Length: 227
Image (cartoon, one colour):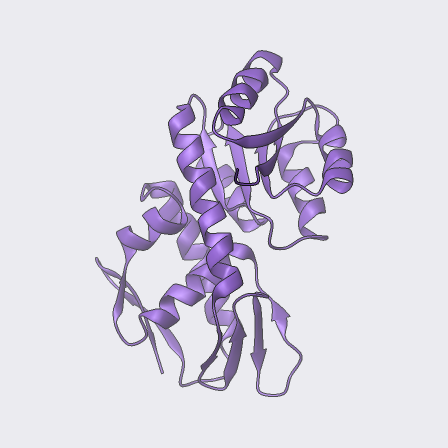
């Protein structure tokens, strides 16, 4: 039997948390359920889960604060936010602090499971990808490190690394906006598109030392990395 993926679920609505827990357990996940952010942080440190599913509004410590603290320790663990919030700034904040996906309540369990499996698949891809040279940079995708010449490497976030990986795979060709949004964000809606724009801006800044490298915005289609 395949080893179960360990998921830390932080959800302060007891009934909803139990429903999610039981549904995931029927799909061969091992679920650690916590009802507040402080307890979730303690369980994270003790149990080393592989995926985090965090409600944004929780007592003692909200999901965004919890994610920020965990990202200081682990920059690669996949994080999915669950929230009733729908304002653009909240969605962008969630991705900016290191979230990998964002699911608005109410949601279907099938959608959550698909998104979890998508993130697990990306994690496996990350482990098998090769070190890549692009311009004067070296990109270590498995470790999510980007280095310029002999300078010390900088750590990319999970989503930055995957977005750069796909840009490099499609170098000098247009990376379809809708395709990459669905692949990395799970949806191509307005909020996800705004989030991707933020990540593209971050990557441009990190590639700025090699002026031959550019990430071009191909209006109406997507982005293109050129060298």
